[in-house]
Amino acid sequence: MLEIINNLNGYIVVVGVILFLSVYASKISEKIGLPLLLIFLILGMLLGSDGIAGIDFDNTLLAQAVGSIALIFILYSGGLDTHWEQIKPVMVSGIMLATLGVLATALVLAGFFYFIWNVTLLEALLLGSIVSSTDAAAVFMILRSQKIRLKHNIKPLLELESGSNDPMAIFLTITVLQLIIMQDSTSPWEWVVQFVAQFAIGGALGLFCGYMFPKICTKANISQPGLYPLISIAWLFMIFGLSALLGGNGYLSVYIAGIMINKFAFPYKSHIIAFHDAIAWMMQITVFLVLGLLVFPSQLPEVALQALALVFVLMFIARPLGVFTSLITSRYNNKEKLFISWVGLRGAVPIILATYPFVYRLEQAQFIFNVVFFMVFISVLVQGMTLGFAARTLGIVENENIESKEDS
Image 1 (cartoon, one colour):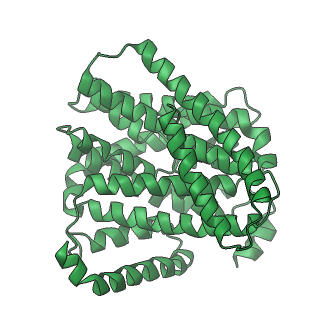
Image 2 (tube, rainbow, N blue to C red; image 1 turned 90 degrees about the horizontal axis):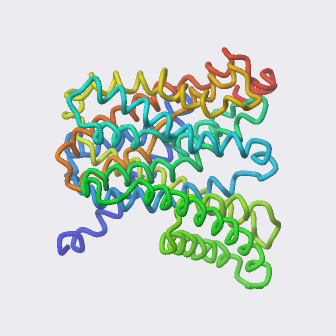
């Protein structure tokens, strides 16, 4: 601690330089087509103990805490940027993808992992659960930065799914971890009750708090506009904390609250949304840098074969099966379902969840973390760089000529 205080000015400069480089990396991303999230991960690895900067960082608890807090702001901002009128027609499909789709993806991937490698069934289910959800930060950022215009409300569906399926993955991961640690001390019926309670309480609280916040801002009548974003942060923390205390899912609550808030007009709404957009970008940069610092690149070649095989199954078998199963009664055709399957980017959430086994002191914790990190890296690289190509190839791009002019 004394060393930090004595070198505080130096650390401040380093943080400023890192943030500046991270923001400027968006220019590089636009020029070479490399997803911005991948650049943040690479930068984090370069700064880490195996990189050129040699920063020694292996605190998984701190990384998990940073990631969890960042996810609150990312999901809230994603909700604020989501328009109710756009997601209303795809609500049922989005919920099916966020629940049944996640479960199907986890089970298929776990089955492959169990039969191919020497792991227990619960360990296989754990890895499947960790990488079962698409990442809100990755999907929001890539879809919006590439300005891909998609037909038939596919974009709102993808954003709704990615913003609402994290709670399912988190629930599955924690459930499997508790089963590993406590074995069968809890009955399946209790897990079902807990699952329903988390989603029911989290959803209801999100709707209520999202409805109340515009009214509070309208009646507050604060003369200093700069305090409204502060009220929003305070409200955000209260939503998440209260939901967790009541047995709900806080991440689902803040995302739904953001969507509800955007439905109404209230004083300084645009200021609040712009503020949270900036905070969400900072959180995305921070969490990917921290997660990049946490990984040891020298250990990745040891799991490369397993991770490549798993990410292949995830992209071409597990995710498509989850999508086609979830959307079997929807109006989307096969080409649209194939594209939805391809937008199954993994990102910060799986890596954050991959730190949980360290907390539970599992023997396979480091192996699982390295495999998940490698899978996320390949997913963002391959799927992130080919979204536009996939959309055009499958013929689901709207106003292609307009889009081309904007991109040029």
